[in-house]
Image (cartoon, rainbow, N blue to C red; front, side, top):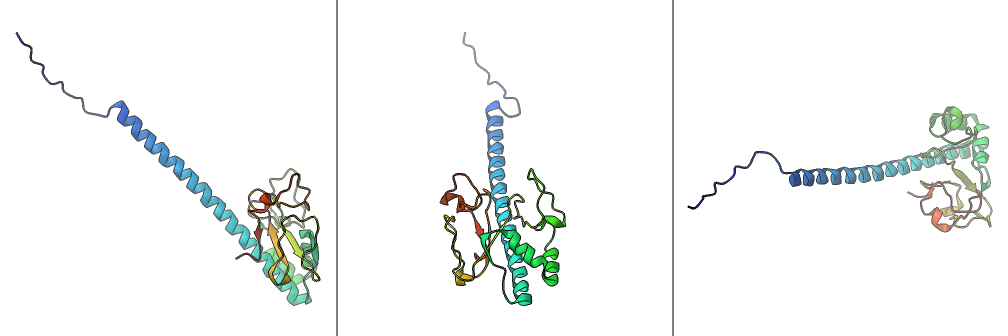
Length: 191
């Protein structure tokens, strides 16, 4: 007697393997989305910092209009610039109009361990102050600078340390400063 096998009916639904494949694809898409969003966030921060640098140039332009010369700043100290600008009412008003994200004395809460000084200008990352350079005689002539470029036309310029927070020079007391630290620096003369 031969037994005939009857086909077994398959229950409706998904197998475990099919569910695992779908979950893996979803996780892969989420991972790619996180990477893309992080990159977009960094680009946004860089664009905001470039806008801050441009705003600083606008204040500098107004300062030059009012006083007929920019403040000298060969050491990169932004307080030289801010202090000089605060002495000219029209420039100080323009500086205040830039908003709290730029000038901590207008109310920025810093994430740094110590409270921010009133003469610092922070970039979009909020942790690193900007630098101001101008030497009317030679451009920049600081022997401690490892990778500091000179501005075209020997004009004053501003620098942000970028996302890594390191300028890549010996001016800020960075330990182990190398030229590679300066690759993400943003300059006001860059477009």
